[in-house]
Image 1 (cartoon, rainbow, N blue to C red):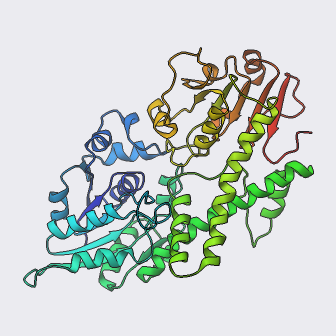
Image 2 (image 1 turned 90 degrees about the vertical axis):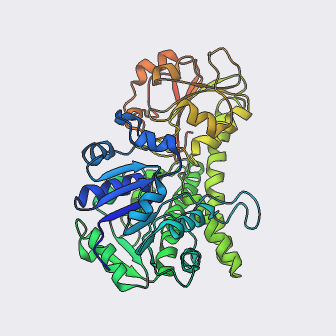
Image 3 (image 1 turned 45 degrees about the vertical axis):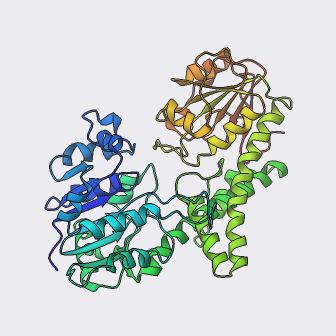
Length: 464
């Protein structure tokens, strides 16, 4: 088995694009081709205007600029690039099934299967196939079964490895450059060594962990489940703080100083979002039920229940503070991405909170520095109004000032830097009083002792 010279990545999304960009940057001797059936997405990756890349991540533009056309390419020529590759990453979407067996919980593996069948059809010689998508345990067996179902005269050889990503959106490039660990699961030692050699171009050998296929697959699901569990835990405590007079920041700091627990993922907020946490926990619940581990399934399902409850709780708090009704009231929503430094809106807390408020009769002014009007329309399933005279629904705002003019309340949902130092003395004059500010991230520089005639609600703090 020869050293890797040509890599193909099937899938040009949030994982495939940035991951392959970093590999190309760190491995100048390797040619990296990212392929996708979505022509529009590929065109965006190839755009001369780097602000139009389909993925926003700090540091990504610079890497794309330096490597694209050198040893990094984005193309729809799937068959050609599979045939030319020594190693193929599968980095396609694995959404939760919407119908059939396991609907609402199990992962839909149709794109994984489709990718495996394309590899089987077009690959030549000896090929390493690497799972990069977040997938259920035993998915590698499906891929292996497809690849190995060939004619006796077919001399091609396939080696299947698992190499899950552990990226946090908003810090993905840094996570790729300086990973906590690189996990490789597999059976063929030579294939594992060749994939390891790629990462050794910038990752210390001690950070490269090697396991069997099934441990690698389950580790990704378990890691996301544990992180989500911490978010739900601290959010449950934030509610208790609000009714007892305790301060969530004090409690969080106290908990975090315990070295057995640590301080990460102990910041209260409107709940977790993104493409992985909910999907992976649902998958874990489904697998646990499948194997008869009902108590395990119930445990992880409660993590999701708390997350959904937190978003409803915030929505109800807003309605209650605004005299029990938001009908025909204007409310500014600051932030729609599920977290700062990304344009990803999948499963964002802003979606459910906005829908709840619209259902209560509110007119929302939504502003996010990186999320487009079209994205918001797709997530809410409601077209935006073109003018501000509507009584109910939502309006797309181009900036903070446009969003807050004439509103009864401001709700900070995403922790963007520009929301941390808002000039409240100026903002207050543009709102309709009595006015409220709801800080679901504890990032505003507004205090309970403000003299601007603004009422303030901060998550995890008593307002009384």
